[in-house]
Structure formats: C-alpha cells, structure tokens
Image (cartoon, rainbow, N blue to C red; front, side):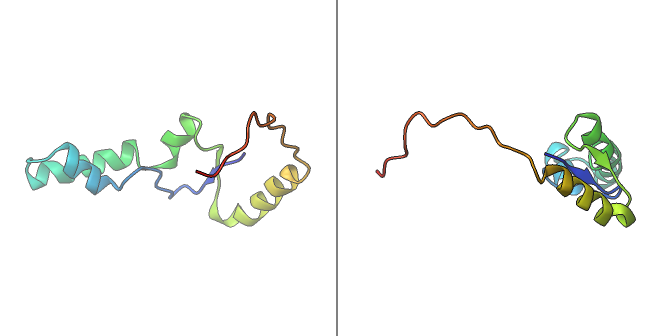
Length: 92
C-alpha cells in the first residue's frame, strides 16, 4: 500500500559490485571500479525507484516514526475487496 525509503536506501536485486562483476566479466579492475560507481549512481538509490513508482516517498530517517504512524492510521479502516474463490484448494 505504501513504500517509503530513506535517502541512503539501496534498492536493487543485488549489490552494485556483484552486478558489475557479472555484466562486465573479464574487464580490468579499474574499469569495474568505474562501473560500480556508475551503477550505484544510476540504480542503487531510491530516486530511480521513486521515478519508476516503486517507492512512494523518500523520507528523512528522523521522520520515520511519524510517517509510519500516519500511514498506519490511514490504512486502519481499509477494506479489502477480494473476488470470491472459484474453487477450493484440494489436498494432493
């Protein structure tokens, strides 16, 4: 329902170093170090995730408690409207 991130959050499937080692396999150590820095700037930060809609807001760590309380209050009366089950789950 809500995804919040700190400015220092790293939102990625894997770390920058591991991803660069796979993508730029066989390259020099210097080239890989440059690519790690580039990868971290492009992908391993919450700004990219927020632009794509994966993160709703980037918040300061000092405001975390307040924002969590606000979001939980907003979700307190939420009603789920799931469709009815068509069939049960039979044991196999």
